Amino acid sequence: LDDASWRIERIHARIVDIPTIRPHKFSFGAINRQSPVIVQLWLANGACGYGEAATIGGPSWNEESPETILHAIQNYLAPAVAGADARRFAEHVQRFDAVCKGNAFAKSAVEMALIDAVARSLGVPVWQLLGGKRIERLPLAWTLASGDSQRDLEEAEQMMQARRHRLFKLKIGARSPADDVAHVTRIARGLDGRASMTVDVNQAWDGNTARQFLPQLVEAGVTLIEQPVAKWDVQALREVTQSLGGAALIMADETVCSAQDAFMLASQRACHVFSLKVAKHGGLLRTREVAAVAQAAGLGWYGGTMLETSLGSAASAHVFATLSDQHHGCELFGPQLLVDDIVEQPMAVRDFELELPDGPGFGVVVDEKRLDRFDRARQGLTPA
Ligand code: MUC
Ligand code: MG
Image 1 (cartoon, helix red, strand yellow):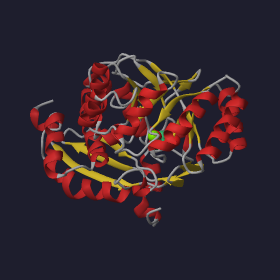
Image 2 (cartoon, helix red, strand yellow):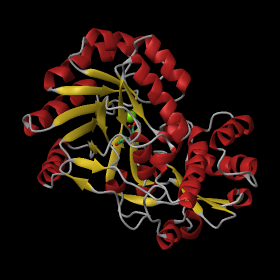
Image 3 (spheres, helix red, strand yellow):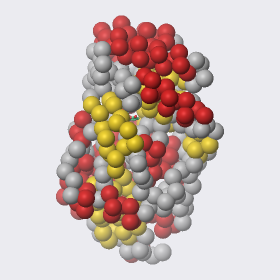
Image 4 (tube, helix red, strand yellow):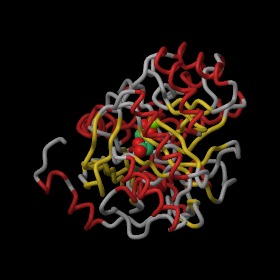
């Protein structure tokens, strides 16, 4: 392959809308569909790389929405790298920052497609370009978020019976804290020690509420508590981290996006674990940077999701495969929450663990027909 073969010829992006198998309820609202932005990037050698950025509930998880992601890619990020040598990933990430402040999700989708295109051209798995594989499989969590304790318990039973999940994340924060504690306690009783339980408050509580109710969640058997307070409230996050004294672990999600966020949280000892997500960090390379801060500080990591299809989930799996063994499992179950997928074969789940894929690229085969079928422009849908 000569230098000219690595030229970025064309970048195409679109929103696809795929319904969820049931409503998925968060502290900030419920979703009935996911709307990831899918990027295709062609090199002069004919290789096509794929990237994905998924948000949750339009701009309600953070500032980015499918529409702003698409806009940033089409108007700023794609023109910034068109015609360049695809192999220079780190330089392209710098260029993205020069033309576009923030917009980490949009950047992650283009970076993903760049890396996939180069890996496919070389015939290697993406993990090979990111430092090499260390981890073969990760315990796979499932989120119980139907909003109904009984339905959640039935779902958990099915998942345990199928040997898919025995690590359950409960979404709380929409109801009163006392109702949430009652819900978590009902599920804990039903699970009866056969599974681990975590909660994600998605920023819904203030410091006083967290100080009052977190001990009750721990008492009920919760072992990992994700983003109990607003993303800016590092002081409260730090206080609850230190007050729990190891009885349960506090995990930062919305608070830890950039490597600078990671450094600040680590230096203040404001959490025990980082939830790593390729989208919020702005790509695969930066996910490794945030993970490096966790490792240097002696913090754990967790393989987070923004409920991507099998494409974005496989991309995440490739970077997670290269990280340290100080992990608390992963939650790359997005494909199973959607009624359909955009790849031919999802990643394998065996004995409660996700098998981290090999290549070439992300090791998934995208089905263009399904991409077309779910394409928002073709379906004539509007924002959710
Ligand atoms: C989040 O905030 O962690 C991850 C799993 C899930 O059910 O929602 C997401 C978002
Ligand atoms: Mg979260």
